Length: 93
Length: 498
Ligand SMILES: [Zn+2]
Image (cartoon, rainbow over all chains, first blue to last red; front, side, top):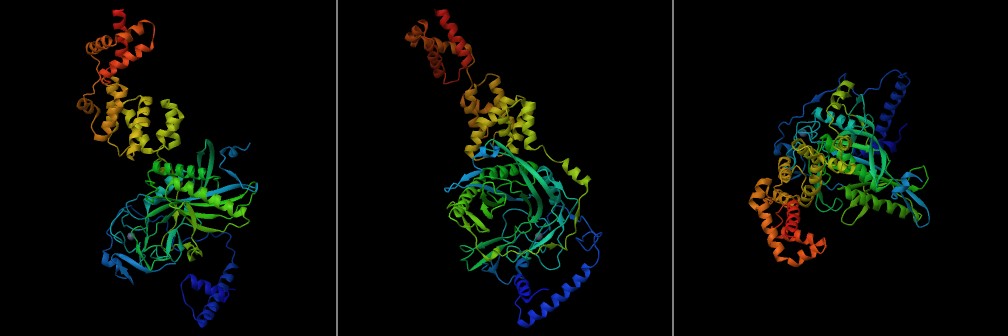
């Protein structure tokens, strides 16, 4: 069981502001999900290797070669705030 | 007596008579010198305007697909082999999630539970004591961007961010907590750097940030098997700073315990100017990284044949090279150690040997006068103007008797300063040694006439008088006379006259 306190903690990590209603709603929904995992846990997976990726792919590489970088205006086009060619962010701590 | 006790630094007695042991583990980050970043084609070039070496992948824009640089994987395996790790047959990338604007996507791609290399070791020597330091793991990750504050991070009204460094490939090498003194920690870090530079995967420059050391430090009462609470020390920008910071931190922790306090688990930063470690109490320390496999990157399956291919590319490492110098070239262990300390110096030494196969003579010049000039100029041997060809040219002039060994020192100095070859320096400075016996004899006769009383002393059996006469001849020839010839001719002349 996860509590509303757990939901608050997860919200903090995700930088989400929750209303009381949302907190209750997500606590219920997350508990439903976890219950489902409890059911999955009943399966015997002793012989099943853990999955690291959903696609049956491995060793996809690129060669060590450079390519074109973005133009300065493109780089900063989506930035909420800037100072010259820097991104500008609010005080961190 | 315990071998380790001999190092002295391993234990320290508190004033209440309690003895403490130090436990240190190091995390070393090394920046690889690839052309492009680890997961995209942006350049790793140094400098450039802020945010000019970025693309949608390293900016973390939605919908992009990172693909790992093959060179990064191969160099991770190469360095892993060099530090005696086993290479994992199965490895993957994970997301390390955190909120801090040095990464634009709010996570750093790293490796969590399945790193590419595991379980290695390095043999170090500190205070003449040899010790094996375990290596827990080596993994690949991406570097973060650079933050620019106005003043300090806590007082700045805002911060500026440059993502040029974000996505530059790093290898992180985590040691076991096997070091029991700051000196051992330094020896380990220096040895690791030496091997990194030998493998050629990084230039390993600590001052420029391509090699970074963080340390986990704790102390405990001697004999205790439980680890004390550790502090993590950051921001040590040289090997000297590493040793100083750890020495300070060990004393600080013992001080806390001696006063009945408790060491707090925290991150501390080394303040080089003040010579202290300072607590970094900030929200940043509430870590919960929620690692999970990065769904954008597929796993690595490394078959033994690939590992063997890479192993075949391993260069001769410092220990092997040093042993070869002792066994094959007949150098002393000390000389071999000095010559192989830096790969560039050993390469230079061998380039000289290829032209002039007198190992001891070359070693003496390389480690002596040349090293002194390089140190004074703050240059490494590959930056200097005295190429192997030129040093050998100098040695050949000595062999041919054209200059004395003593004159050669001055010639080397001029070669170093001007970049000229030995023959030219000798000609331009008029330094050529006088081997013409007629010219020397003329000077000898003049000296004997001017110093009749000394000659009388010599005849009266005072051997020291001969030395004086040799000195006078050398002085008159401004040191250019061949000393062997002077000695011989002087004796002959005295005999003839006597
Ligand atoms: Zn990029």
